Image 1 (cartoon, rainbow, N blue to C red):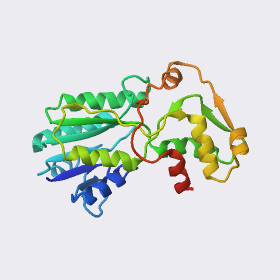
Image 2 (image 1 turned 60 degrees about the vertical axis):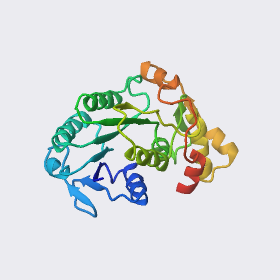
Image 3 (image 1 turned 90 degrees about the vertical axis):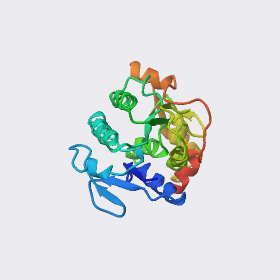
Length: 248
């Protein structure tokens, strides 16, 4: 198996590369910059992409860009089809076809392009990473109040997503979606905010007092309140509180 991974230096890409290496694989990492096991190419311009895919049998597509996801994916697919790639694994997001968010619509378009490409494929949708929740809270860390939306969240560790991707690498293409992957607990975002504050030394009463829920208007907020971005089924990986404690 000759394996190429896009987005291999990103939030989920790094643990995925490490998990693949532990499984005895040595993936090439498509990157705009030179480095260990890197093949230099640019999905935005298409420069070097065909050469990067030369001889590749399995492609794990993790690279994402809010402004050009579909365009970059189309470029990658054209090169993958010409190279005779036997299995493309794409990481998407739970609820992209139900939550009216521009970035999610781009993900749906990428899924459709992959399905129409003629390249054998598997699509895995995952819930938000622990890092996503922390990134929402971190800018508020010095404010007297932490504002959260009154929505549920089901965050998952990137290591759990990486482990599932490695499983898929060793399986045949599904030519569709496999079961969505979510974290081990679905809780209000406010509760995760309290856990995050506690991991940073806040006493329980302080964490409780500082977190304020906001009932945002509109269809987007309603979709999130309905939990359309969650699986509703407990999944693998460590809980957010454990992750937050390890990051503090």
